[in-house]
Length: 170
Length: 429
Image (cartoon, rainbow over all chains, first blue to last red; front, top):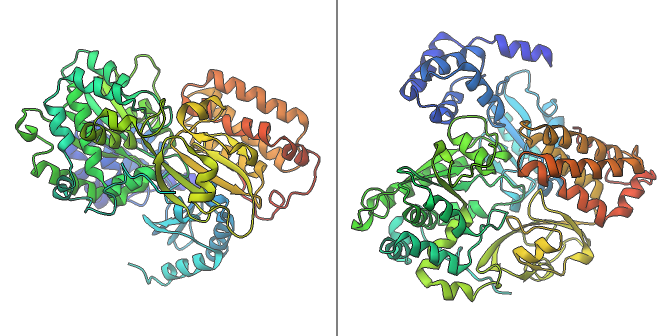
């Protein structure tokens, strides 16, 4: 865990990407209320909200770096750690819980050989618990990169994950 | 039983992004009426209608407007709370995705009443897939002259902007939401000053839930007398109920306030599937109380539910069958609060963690009767000393579970085998 944190802190994003980050943030100089918009856009092009990324956002928007960092660490959907190409969110709330979410979670863990909160060695999958996604009428549900899959069983979730492993989804 | 569709009238019948479809279905008539009315007349109409907030607390809507209206300021804001973070609730998603123009119309009427020209919709990050459609709907409304500059030639301007959250339950608390819109951590503010005086960007602000705002246009369109004929004396109108969990037909249903909970579960939603039986119901979202099967013969109305120690909240009904264990449910519930506590105040940050540990200890068969006392006394402290509603209400489910399912807690302390709590691979926290 500590090793992972050290790696995240010292992670260096390529200079060309930092230029892109600066381009996203620059139009919002002195308008801190647009931090969420900037952060959501930046998330699309950087693998980690590392120190250098938050420093660029802070410089371009003219707000303290601590504010940027405390912001990205507060919201559950923003990642400061390593994250795979596909982020699998497993709903952990009661409506999914009572309809077999744990069996579904276990099936995914076993299939990808990682535990909750971890990322596969090849950087393709991150598995994380998430609070309710508001699709309780089809619980238990998971969300992969914004796409929702509902009414899952261990068997059907294995089919879903298999399509991602084979890259048979858009 | 037939549903009564007031809020869901257009859902699934019109194209949500089309302002024209909404106008053809009678949309923006209410705004037209309101534009010719004075602030006092609009607020009086809302007062006569008896509309109360649908987000959880049931606060009379007109009072919020009164506060903001009586504060002198050139800039005021209307905020729509579309953060729907309450586990098990998706009524606001149905309204936002099915009939967004009705929400815009409600916001514009509130804006007209308090003299605000800017509205914000704060939508939770999980609903990001609705964003493009909402932008289109806003654009179409402006094209039709129903939003934007000089609405319907009345000289009144009202612009609505969309802001996204990124996964934080506490942002549903109004002052935390203001912080988040301002580009900060979503931590609640000290009150007073109240939002009606010092809200978003320090300006007078009215914040309402999506469903509350959706109620406003029908009130102005059909009149307060009509509205009063629906629901009960204390809580007029219809309510959206999200029924989820172990029922045959899950989903969002619209009924007049005061519908019987038992009828809702058995007649409307088809009861419990797979030959199982009802064990518990949690009404009102994650911070609602757990009630047992003998307590469900109640009318779902704000005051009645509150008087019986529960809360109607956002109208979520989580039905739990007897293959589950109440102590395990409590653990799951407290784990949620432990994760979602923002950490600003000590009673909530430490309290939710300790409550989870204590409940987990009991469910693991390592608890004693003293732990139950500890939960109760800690709950009281949190209730009195927490900074915002999250910490104050996080204790309701565990306390109600102990009250209504006492033998189950004793059974776990006595180390009687529980197939749910003793299963392998159980969630660790």
